[in-house]
Image (tube, rainbow, N blue to C red; front, side, top):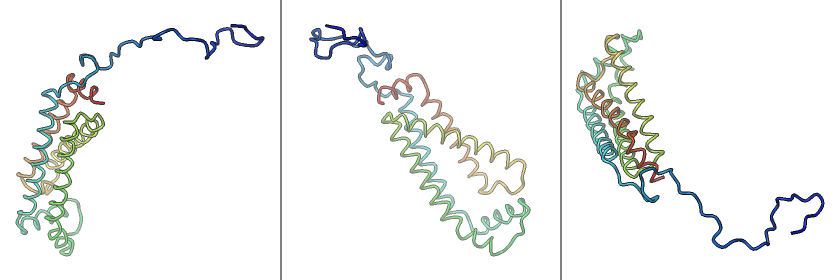
Length: 197
């Protein structure tokens, strides 16, 4: 190959014959333990997290049904207590509006929350990495808001709206969320999510 003045001596001629086979690429170590780059079987930790998400969705639906069955006089008392505890005047029109809309709002909210639980369970079961991150964020929010509501319940009279049963459902949901997040980030779970990405 002739070199012209000003030409880079290391520049190769693109038309020159190339050696047979070229260079082989180095093996990838991104999927440690995944064998020859094939998908990793779904580990028990992801399977358990998926099932627990379905349980969380069912629990959300139960919570919505409970919202429909709460007696009107109990709802009225809870709304009045919350207004008094927050320093607001107890206006009968506000109380009536809250009492009439609370069951439907509770049911619709429960259906949306259940749908999110079910969707996250399905997508995490399929190994979608972004779904694991979303489930983690939602799980942390669940735990933090439950802890904050417990602090509020112990410090402010009237803040235990929904009664003991709703408190128990919230606690069970938060514990489920914490266990799910733990299961999704175990070592074998991480290998599974990496292999399906």
